Amino acid sequence: MASTRAAIRYAKAILDLANSKGVAEAVNNDMKSIANAIETNLELSTFIENPTTKVEVKESALLEVFADVNGVTKGLFHLLFENKRFEILKAIALEYNKLFDENNGVEVAKVTTAIPMDAELEAKVLAKIATLSDKKITIENIVDPSIIGGFILRIGDNQYNASVANRLQVLKRELSN
Image 1: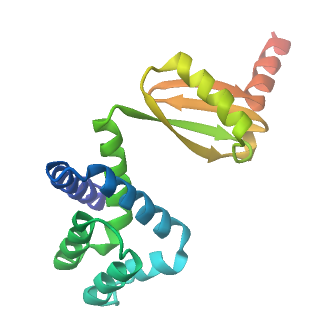
Image 2: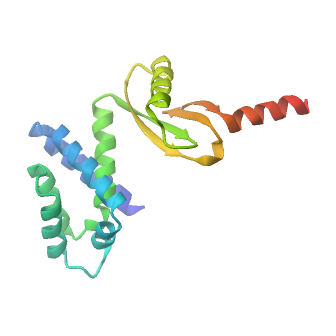
Image 3: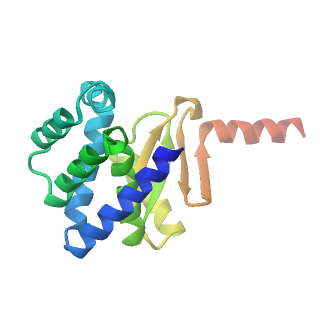
């Protein structure tokens, strides 16, 4: 749990610094690509989390892999080097994205689908979102085959369930009454 609190503190500090330099959006894009790279590249995540790899090696490798990131992001790498906390880099990146979105009035809509969303379903979901929220929305797609089809939309505390599994459940209840 301590690492999440630490990640939030780092993310807030980096966002404050990025805002003061007017580069918050550039750093947000850096954080998205860092989180994505760590998420999708097992070799990179294993390397970052390996306690036996020297922090100097981690810092120089990250500066090489992410050579074209903003100076503020490079500053984060150095801070993690000094504090020997590279293992929370992904958590910091995700926290930063969340804080950046909150500060800019962007809300995340979690959309659960049985298979990855295509453009047609994304359009339907965006149309439904427009009726539920007047904020700027970014979509996060969660794939869960157990819902069979359709989608479940969650924005903040609101949930809209248009899944086949839910319709079958409702039908089952009606038939048993």
